[in-house]
Image (cartoon, rainbow, N blue to C red; front, side, top):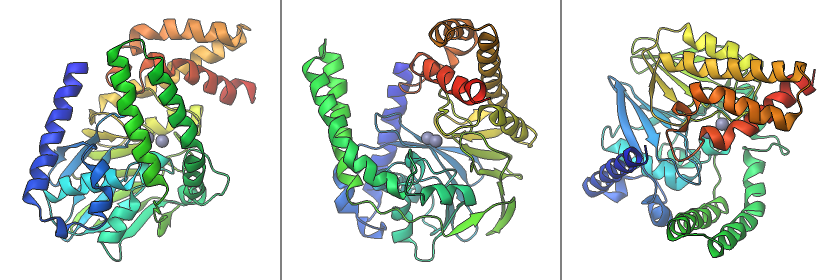
Length: 367
Ligand SMILES: [Zn+2]
Ligand SMILES: [Zn+2]
């Protein structure tokens, strides 16, 4: 797994190097110099999942970036999700220009989380008249002054909280037990400092168009369906479905890591994934991790179902929460630990306790 990741990173870096070499930087949209220092550290791997359709798979890094979907039409490009910061979007934009130099007509944000939309400005600055689309709920959350985990106000909150996070990494470096840990923490520190610098100046534009029901775009000869299938990872998850190519982009409603429940609706989530499974799809562009076959939808729904079932059963048996965490982690491990620990982030053991906690809070304690 670790070796596989390294190989993938190397490939992605080689792709970027090739793209940078063949491009005139003046063709790029914006701010290339401002982001140059950190842009080179980002990496995406463009994987073709259909004719003119790519999954841009983000390298797993301390400061997480989402995947993107890149859809080419007869007259332009549609990009799904823009990562955590302008330099990441800039880096992917360079890669994209290696496969198509058409203008970006539309950006779609799958949900409001910081790692999926904070690079919007890169595409907006380079493409006058760009339409940015999200669900109505997602835009409402992006513009809610009290929202956590994403949105305009959350950028300021991160600017305020990052110095403490940076101090913590510095202190962990002092206490690092070995050279490998120290080197990893030093890489994290560089990412955290670069991220804070970008947070201070980023101004991602919010969506210019919202949808509250399913919409079919006839975009430059290509059919793109925007589907609201129910609450899942958030209450505004938008699914991007290409019926001809049999591809769906899910945002974080389906990922190849362990799910993140903080803004999620556990029981609704099962139904929503079941609704995606009803679509005629061959390839799933997930929010984090490699594109997956349709069978991953069933597997991922299986995890949600087993986890929620286990929490409810243990609660009915009056098991204390700490015991519940230990028992469920062990009970579900044979089926889920290995497949849910493929990447350096979002692994089974990293998240299972928090998953049990959140599902308990949202499905048992509340009712
Ligand atoms: Zn995400
Ligand atoms: Zn998310």
